[in-house]
Image (cartoon, rainbow, N blue to C red; front, side, top):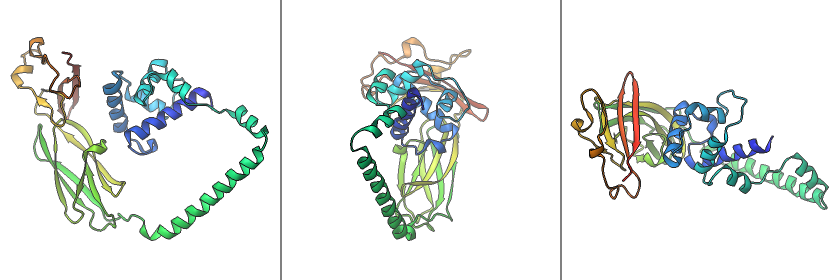
Length: 288
């Protein structure tokens, strides 16, 4: 493994831990779309979904990522740039390993490591055998949903049945963001959640800490709509403010002149239309 690939793998691992979506081996295309949006929001750099898929090995590609791409990934993983990341994470190649073997007491160290590995392996077997009867059971699980109307805000009714599982806790997660996870009654079968933005979402049914069911949710907008980002509920703009006949958008005089009401974050104007034909979206940062 080259030193550059070693650091790329370390960077990917840091990003996977940061987003908390589980192993990237199970990531879907929507996960890379969401990651692209997160990286843009935090670094103001656009990395396309196809670029991220190539870096994560989902698409065959032999060339190395360029420095601007690596800088954006490093910033998102917590470093100021790619150079800082590579200098902070040591690289031990095969030559270093051979040098380590030649050092005094290396055999003793390796022997202790092997002993520790064997001990851990035996402990793991014992624990597995002791807990095998407590494995999560979810063979008769159902999970579906249906939006109540068109447009936003939109209430989505989730139908679920986890009563046959042995899970202690049941959660419904609105999308990829684990912060949107709500605990529900295991013995009930219906839950309502509100979606404030149109678009594609991936809802998940979570038993204890395991995602056992998931499906897509498509929230359509009634037409072109505009809003200013704000958590937890965006500020919707009147239709007459964005609809100017031959064009859709926000005039200069309508842009908010103060960001005091946005938790010290620069707000973003979003103009979007979401329908069965696809999604059209424009995002503009609103500077004071």
